[in-house]
Length: 323
Image (cartoon, rainbow, N blue to C red):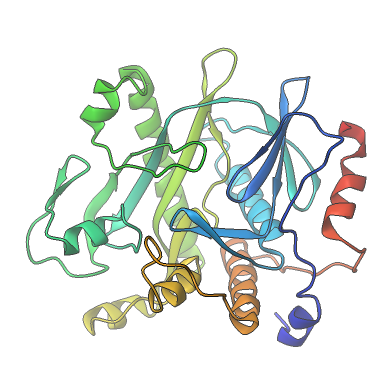
């Protein structure tokens, strides 16, 4: 990506996607959602970046990157499980089938990694050895590959709450899903992760971990929702440099939300302290990371389109048929 071109377009940020003409607005951490009368949902990916259960900043073109990356993966995995996609009327927008979201988030991990309070690395460093129903041996190193991918479910925090770690037994004991649903969820998640790791390896990447959100449709069928294998929902490392960096005890090269997470963690405790303003150069550099992620993951070029004014105005024009 031409950094001069990116800086010149850094003002094209979508930090809010409120559209009064659309009904039933729900604002999530990153996406604005509208439920339509025909049973579909308009999902607009903004440029907000969320971590540590808070909004940190707005990154130019991030919403477009997320939508188009998820589109690539939805199309690559449609043979594994059904997904919610109906149409893409705008680069930042997907219209999907409205689902009843299941109250458990499925996180699949292939490595002892992470920076959040619920990551296996954070918990391991605190001395915990049994997490999410899985027992880890002593002596593991940061960012070490696990013997096989594991599922680490968390409670789905609605209305801005905190996700909480769960074991599979707790998922079932709390009645969050039925045993049959849990069996389907885990089978889907592990198959999706395997496909993601395979495709990532073909691009010189390692898919380290990811989260999936599932819901049920009007028939009770389990359907993949939200996003899949994007830089927001997943951690990617560069495969070529991982062995040497791991051997040296260095952090693997990545291009996901860790770029911003690490900047914040180096300056405060994001769960307790105010987060300092993120400088413009970090914002632009983060935008470049997201665009590079899209291009590397998909093998496609990211083109910055003509400046048509406010991003939200363009989206409203493209959604005119839904209003």
